[in-house]
Length: 493
Image (cartoon, rainbow, N blue to C red; front, top):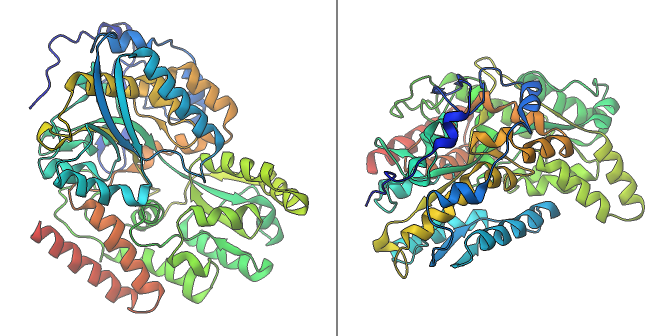
């Protein structure tokens, strides 16, 4: 079933000016645009200059797609804020649901917020049991699996009144399977390197100068450990946790490797590169930190990014890779601390710095991440699909307002018109270091757009890391083992 947009005028775009032209890493080329965004000049200064230059009426945009008086029902699954999330995320989520209820008062919503690390398996089981939700917001990595299995409805920005030019090319790539689109981007994220300037100073490093290369990061991590006794870098290597590939793949790509050829200008996803010299060099760098230098937490084998937060706020960890939300999370932790712990935490927050993720011999890279909204096929949706309710909801959540607000502390608006909004200006004015992570977008590389990507990134890549870090295998053997597993996986599926 394909949705039609024949009655969805989008005249608002005709009055916006500008041409976007951006070469994203991984071969994602931005097309011409009428969004008022000049993505060829994507610097922190340019991003600040366009914020707050446009007004948007979410209800009016929704009304062009589904009448606001429409009565219906919606089931929705997503991963929402958890106990580790800063308070502002919980507040904005509450505002989102209140605003949707006000915009569409006659659409009854049944929602389920799931844990990130368990959602994929639960959604797989629900889909096979014909108990899928109507709409799900999924990480950028997951959608192709469900599209390849025929579980998703063909669905594109045009079906909710938006143009392809309102979204990053890498994001559109992530919702495309065999030439058809199966979703609409909700938000896009890139991360940055975070460091404790005081620990740098204690270790004899320039407190305002982050490591320029990954080789530098390895050396910095060792120097910090040797001179302060504190861990240098917050390595994450847990299996079946999305945090791991989001932190290791930028390192792998920077050295010139890849899982497949996803970092190439025109990837085919047929060339396995996890056992390339560049990939092995990246893996060796991780082994050097974990085994040789012992400059990273020994618990890296089971850590997610959440486990890096306590040692960082207590001044026991110097560097980590994460979202701008880490600053808000650290502020929250500092406010909740008491006594001497509070003094230490406040000092850490004052010494937090953000910078670009280090580059390697091949490139500077970051995962082009985020999430997409998908609609499941009627035959596997529990209770049947209300197409109009689903369209109304996706229109609401992927417009410039809520794609900006819902990405408040940890991401960027999926709809790039959101960069011109007053909400983006408020974010830039109130969220320290947001401009740094946002400026990493041109270095973003999407994960391979394959149904096997989740298995490759969440299982095979972390297992390769584990095999090398635990000395179960040599670096060469671990990389070759991963290459064989990827080859077998692609052949089987």
